[in-house]
Amino acid sequence: MWITLSQTETRTFFDIIREIEGGSPRAVAVVAAAFVEEHLTKLIRWRLIKEKIKSDVDLQKQIFRPGGPLGDFGNKISLVS
Image (cartoon, rainbow, N blue to C red; front, side, top):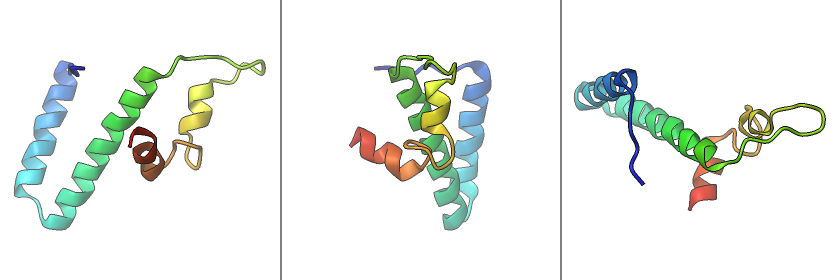
């Protein structure tokens, strides 16, 4: 599967690369982890079928909310491992 980026995402990607190349080890770890988590979330959302439950609540919002089943980075990693 190929991931395509919009112009804004491409600029953001290169900003992140510059930050990683010139940052302290701590900054690199934080920025890289945030980048990976954001794109992992996008990939998981892309794979899910958006459904509405009877109470008209978006299932994806429930799953990805902070503290939700896939709200934490570690849970997302476990899902795709």
